[in-house]
Image (cartoon, rainbow, N blue to C red; front, side, top):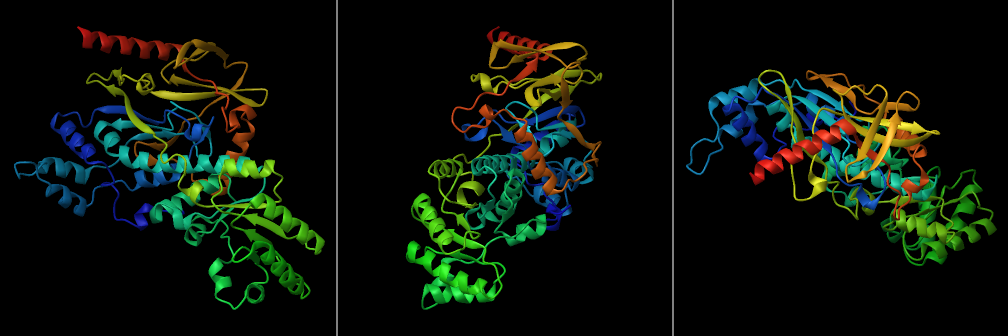
Amino acid sequence: MSHSYATNYNSLALLTDFYEITMAYGFWKSNMHEQNAVFNLFFRRNPFNGGFTIAAGLEYAVDFLNNFRFTDTDIAYIKDLTGNNSKPLFENGFLDYLKSMEFRCDVDAIPEGTIVFPNEPLIRVKGPLVQCQLIESALLNIINFQTLIATKSARINLAADGEPVMEFGLRRAQGIDGAISATRAAFIGGCFGTSNVLAAKRLGIPPLGTHAHSWVQAFENETEAFYAFAEALPNNTIFLVDTYNTPNGIDNAIEVAKKTEAKGYTINGIRLDSGDLAYLSQLARKKLNEAGLSHLKIVASNDLDEHLISSLKQQDAAIDSWGIGTKLVTAFDQPALGGVYKLAAIESKNGEWLDRIKLSEQSIKVNIPGIQQVKRFYKNDLMAGDMIYDQRKDLSGSVKMIDPADPTRTKILDKTIQKCEDLLIPVMKKGNCVYEKESIYTLQQRTSQQLKLLDKTIKRFVNPHIYPVGIEETLYNRRLELIVKHKQAINS
């Protein structure tokens, strides 16, 4: 793979919350550790008050699972942990079990770049209870972040409406791995390159950028700085024109560009990084055109996001491409996706699968039980609705899906007359990887193609239309049955 956690760390088995290990020990002590279970990773709300989400992070998740093991140093660390009586927390037998444990779960997932919605399992894990439990925290860490950033990137690229978007967020990203993961997810969401050279190398995507204000400051005047830069890099020149005075900077860039192009080179353009970007871009375009430099592009940066881009376009800003940093790589207006990982079924001693549910005072936090799959239906070449169903259910003929938040909202779907597909595909079988790595360009193309299949009312930023996602009727009734059962037990 292009990026392997194993190249940076001996093991990531301890990339977990402590309670996962204490629960694993409890399952081992209770002789439940080899009992098969099913967990689903999903989220409850679309981020950014939007109408859709872009799945991302699967390649990293598979890489983590491929390398999942407890090393000697991991075991030594766990062995030294003590309780409130200063005695070891864990028995040697449990430590021996962890040391010899080989990952052997079945993992199914929705491919990266796919549009997904609340309550749909992005990843389904089926296997020994202890193993399903121990991988929870890392999977959430990987999928939550990259899915969040890919979605933000997709929104920004929708706002740019086909104009190139560059990811410029390295210096504001949340640490080294956060920067690389953010670059990857931003590219999946639609960005065409990055300022992060290490990420560009690892991912095989274009590195982008020219010079900063310090370049201009290092010379006696702006014109001298532009001449020096054009001479050094005549085939990769964009002048940053706002170090001192933007209108003067535009004039100085024009002077240098004309003389440089007279030597047979082509200047790429100018960049605006402050001020009234609508006014300044229009001024720059007018000056460039009048100077016979209409081919020079105008790049804009300065804390942009999808809302500012939309506003600038409404003002007829003359901007050709966009550099997005802080508000992309930090998902500035929503710090986390809020994905969760819940037990949905467990296998009994006699081999029967028992559905499991978590209750809550908040209805949105009541999970869906069963061995879930997501079926997507299409109509008139657009996505028409998604149905969460239990894969043990025979779906031949017509089926009804019910909105989990409003049982009066139902939809009859006939899979025999509508195009449909199951979204979860196998990525690991019995711990063996069957996932075929895809080019990051393929993932980016999938995002673009998926967005074209989504009605424009769902893609709008303000009060987007709600895409229909429902639970298959039998599964819905099973969920309701479990809710009633547990509430009656509480009240009895």
